[in-house]
Image (cartoon, rainbow, N blue to C red; front, top):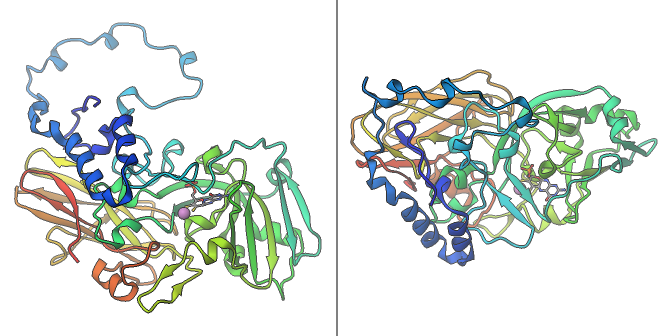
Length: 447
Ligand SMILES: Nc1nc2c(c(=O)[nH]1)N[C@H]1C(S)=C(S)[C@@H](COP(=O)(O)O)O[C@H]1N2
Ligand SMILES: [Mo]
């Protein structure tokens, strides 16, 4: 196992210390062994917590103050060493990771974003979560073509150069897979926020509004009710979006965080569908068809549907409802001593802006209003924070977000009353982290 960096008073989450061999080992286990797999992963990783003597010296006799280190005297690295900058080697454990509890099916895979290690609201491009139904490709942009057909006056094919001449917008939005937090529907308490909420990211995207493109092709304003978006990978990813939403704020993006998209995230072109579940953000986008009804494709009829308690299916659920989670401290982390902590987390709503976030330290009996950090943008992550003086007693930390429509994030119990327990998708329940007297933070279901 790699060295545990001793920085700050919160010991980092254990997944940052799992060796690839350990991850491979738990991945070999069956899904039924989920709890066991996670338990052993955690036990292994927290074994060193006992040696809390890592507490840093902050006295005036600290050799880190008294002895001049090499970097104050020698010559540093030349610019030529980093034509494309990379994170510090001391941050190498902050990675997107596959869940030890999910079985990987060939190239159809998920990597989770390490929310516990991020600040502010923007996800660094290299840590954006990934969900590929049939693996990812690095597509030659000079050969990529994008077509619009169906109920249009003139079907058109665009090259990337054609698209990049058109008027563009740059907007910050979150993307959340509909299956995010899906494991929690059952009685499985996934150990860390990377795996409970890590199919979530937020970036600035740049591209051409669908309103511009659909106008360019002369779409049928009377009969055109839906568009079908299609990807260029082998997964035949096709999703229907209503024309109102398409014209409202959807766009085809070629850039993310100021540079061209990363291959894993759909280079050279993807759909950005703000507020709508991740599956509709079709990557390697090659076609939009204008039609008069939703298309009922395989990813709208077999997948991305939820079994309700009465045996019917919830279908075409597109909006990601208001949700929040505390990321610091969160499951798997350990508070090293009593005293002040800045508790912080993320809130978002597919229906607009986050209006308020309340935080509870006693499992939902009492709530305090957290501070929202600017900017607070529509269909974008919002960072919240609140001070907490830990006196050493056990606590249950929760956050509850409210969006500008007045919608209040539900307790797990309230959500289960309506949706039952057989769903996979669209779990936006309040997350509870239990803080033990020994400082350890873990995922608990408190109803
Ligand atoms: N063409 C194509 N588009 C796709 C997918 C895919 O497998 N192929 N996966 C979808 C799913 S399920 C999600 S959650 C998002 C994930 O986007 P990301 O990998 O950039 O995070 O892309 C969506 N778009
Ligand atoms: Mo997804």
